[in-house]
View 1 (tube, rainbow, N blue to C red):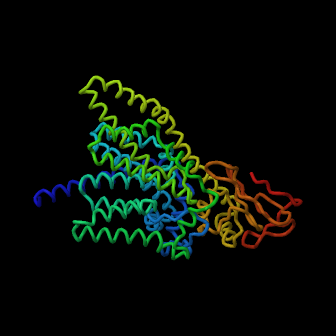
View 2: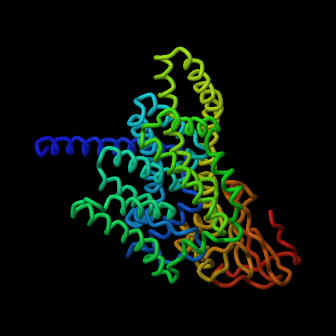
View 3: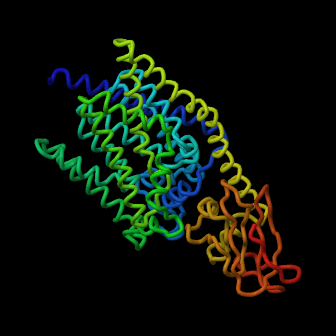
Length: 481
């Protein structure tokens, strides 16, 4: 054993390095297309700048931002040293995460049912609803799937410490992973050596520290839970479950269930099926408890279903070679996958266009700031609390202005600068105007769909930090476009 472990481990390390390097290289090529993070990823980049000493980000604060996620910020904090390149570096990691997730689906499917099972698992994963769009815009879900799929594959390969480490990475993206990680730690504790037990304790401690300890620096150790229970984002448990099941094709779910019947003596197949059901049940329970549960939270269960579906098709084809009666069933299964899958393949470019629309909106926002007197002037106004912007563009504006997320509002409640664009998926809803008295307005900058409007009392100047301009014309209502 001692004579073979060393070379085998070296080969595994070389393969892992080559895989990660290849994923990063391919992801780098995608940055040649218009690219920009969306709302949550830009917030992680802002937090990274605030946590990195000397990066010019100001004090660390979670107010005004999305739910806290530790793992992305572990990347964006050192990326802050790269200055304006930090958003692109995070996009590089997120898009490489999608490629690693596809490789993980293939590796896990191949382990369960051979090369065909792996290829079908990877294809089904690629066709999960909005997964390409999420990766293009820098969301964390592709990395989550990569960590979970490779953790499962490494566990089946007998590499429990590495599997647990990847599970820790997944738990630092979604807290729902933590209960599963804790159960795995308890299961693997018995009979484990000192190094593995040390890794278990350190990993669990790290999850608690980064989910609770870092937010405590900003004054709210339970910030992630508080934000996730926002009343405006709540859904019922049935609605959450319908969204989760809609992530992949109905035929994939049916084949995933069939995999258990086709492979009754495969404990790994049963375990993956139970894990997928447990994940869906957990999300439904959390939705019933008042936590936000958008469909993308169900991606881990859908990814496991993709792997099981690939294994089911491979098992059907294997039986078809042995028994003529199974051939028709195998052909039906392949058709049930291929026909709807073709429609989803045709829509993949739509997901990329969604991402490029975000990049175009951000580019126009930057140009609008320049035409309004420059980011420095708008920044001074924002520091005084006098800037409002479209909802999903707040983190991008905070990044451009080098201010905290709480310095850009979603509702204008006092005179200042209104930075707005028509409602769209890329820019979000425009800011509301809730001033107590009639106002005057003057456009001071524009680019593309974006307008920068100076809003103040009629005939009165804006706050000095906002340039001190006077609003022109009679009092008029600012329309919420």
